Length: 251
Length: 136
Picture (cartoon, each protein chain N blue to C red):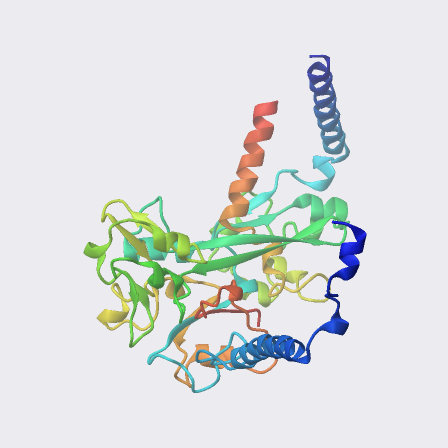
């Protein structure tokens, strides 16, 4: 094309744009902005029941009754492992698995020294259990009354171990003898259903580390410990959103 | 090839140097003056509690008669056999509680894991013992 021909053509710059076109463009822009703005305003509203912003439930708002929970007074643990022995004996746990175990942390102190902390761990009987959500056969579920997460239907378990991977607390193992997943059930089968009031590990602990009880009962020790003033209460891996029912304190 | 050989020589030299340092450390510790070097391990009434003579004598400057024979007999496992060798007794000033009262040394009801090394700590101690036994 020659330069003379180009000069003959109609200009395409903004000065020659008709105002209808400008309005159309602005309207489109507003529509896009409005859509994003509307979306973000809608997303500010809560989608579920948020019981509390922290890890401790609001007093009176417990989804279960009795709401079984455990408080672990962590720094008192001395790793004597009597709890593990009691659990194995009570619930016939094989050597290759565990329903509860004790982890160890080391923190550097001044003067090239270390401080050891033992951390008992077990199933957290979460209010929003990731293991239950992934089970394809409903072999495991959360009891609607007590909130205990259990393998209520072991014959349904196909051993896919998806729940093992989903659990944020490594609280499940595959029981070779039963050909089903096994885990802590707060001693429901072995003790609570037979009139017992505490778990075997709680009973065995000589250092009063594991406190078990009904969080929904204001006279229970777990309630008093979790809701005590000037207490730091923490849970393991809160970021998973599982809302665990095993609380850790140091008082 | 040369690099691999060099690496082997270097790590060998480092290992020997480490052993030498350990030997020198043991030499400085006199068992006649400071008591047995091997840690004392109690598994009763609960697993597992450790006591090191070195920490108390060589490091803290206590003499033998600070504890022997009033608080502890100089016999392996003597305290463990007694029924009153419990935390409750320690809180009343017996055994370790004689010093571990909160003023002379940290109180018996604090810093539990300083002495209570647990089953895991015990296993680690045994592993270490095996490792040194093998190297000699």
